[in-house]
Image (tube, rainbow, N blue to C red; front, side, top):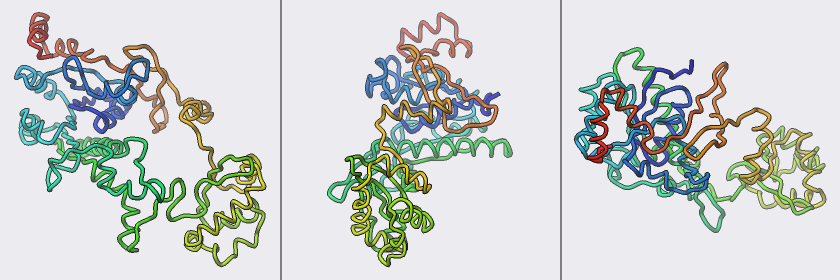
Length: 392
């Protein structure tokens, strides 16, 4: 039995944040009913067509879910949603600010009708404050939280290459739902909580914010290097390859000097004897390291780093990640079905003893609509009528 078997989640969701939360709930056995627009579905279905004609975003986020299409502007569709919610444990949504309230699914109304229902609202900036009605996309949240100010090179900022604001909000929504389920087990009553992209990514920005607020100087943009740890980042080798490494403490710094650079006296050099001094004198430090590496191949340096137990990594392409030997060795790949056939999917990262995560198919738009309506007691004639009226 999976940990969340018996839990039903109704998701009025789109794009990334809410679907990321609910897919993880589905992985652990929850029944997730995804409410989509008739015919077109979640607009993330159209982000690209790179996975055998399906969108990479949708494939990633929506396995193991049931797709129920409803035009919620229609009263009959609203009634169907209420019927589904009456048997649900969790209702999660990430529509535009005020949208669920306008549809008649506000927090107070749902709590009155379904007191055990857990409600999770995901928004850009939260439901109050001067930014409450402001549109929020991942790049814009990266800007507002200051992430771009510390990401990139000294010459130009750069956005993070994944939807990090949406992902952070999805993670807090996921953990918040688990917390609310635990609380309900003690109190017997559901609770409403909200998660915003801005506050979620803001939590992840706390360290550089502390650095800037209390030092008076923001962390510099350092490309693939680290603003407050050195040596840390990429270094070129004799054979024109790039080695990535990180030295985290003084014990490692001493081993790096002795066994990698073969310059043991460097560990006591006044310019480099503490991490703070190494950061302050980063240019001189990098020159020294590059001088040593200019006489060694990438393979030679890697052997020395491994023997000295200094952290190192290759700069993998996405294809190399896809074929990574660690994923193969730990058997992290599974096959899932979809409307366009089988495709690979990574197991979720929580590895739990005696639990094989659920890896069910990715749904077509509205694939489960009729089956769900039948379980609610709708006749074939009524279902056909709902189709005709474009309710479903």
